[in-house]
Length: 142
Image (cartoon, rainbow, N blue to C red; front, side, top):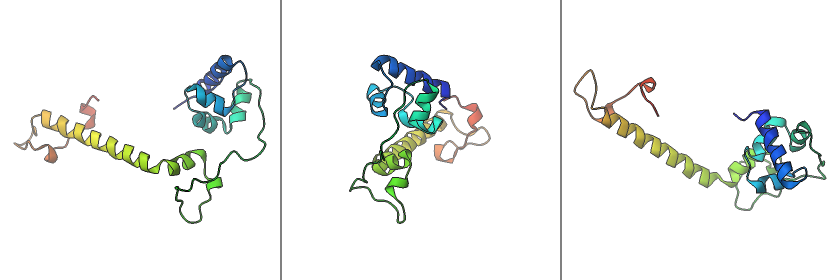
C-alpha cells in the first residue's frame, strides 16, 4: 500500500525535475511511481495532493473525462462519465487484463504442480500424483 508520504515525495520530485508544479499529464510523462491514479485515490484529487505537498494548484475548467471509445462496451445503465478512472481503465483494457489474469493463474498453477511433484508424494500414503496432492502454504517459501 502506498503511503501519503510516498505520494508527496514523488510529487515533489516531479516538481523539482520540471521546475514547476506538475500537471497530471506532466507527472505521467516522467514515469514516476506511484502512478497518478494512486495519488488521486490517496488524496481524493490531484489538486488536493499538490496542496498537501505545498505545490501550486490549477483548478479544473471542465470535465477531463474524454468521450467513451467506440470499441468499449458498457453494461446497460452505466455512464462512462460516472465511472472512476480505474473503472474506465478496466473497460478500455478488459481484453488485455483478462489475458494477464489468465496467464498469471496458469503460471501459479504450473508452479504449484511442479512444487507438489518435487515433494515426492504424500507423507501418509503412497500417492505421488501432483493432481491428488495438497500442501500447507505455511511450509512453502515463495
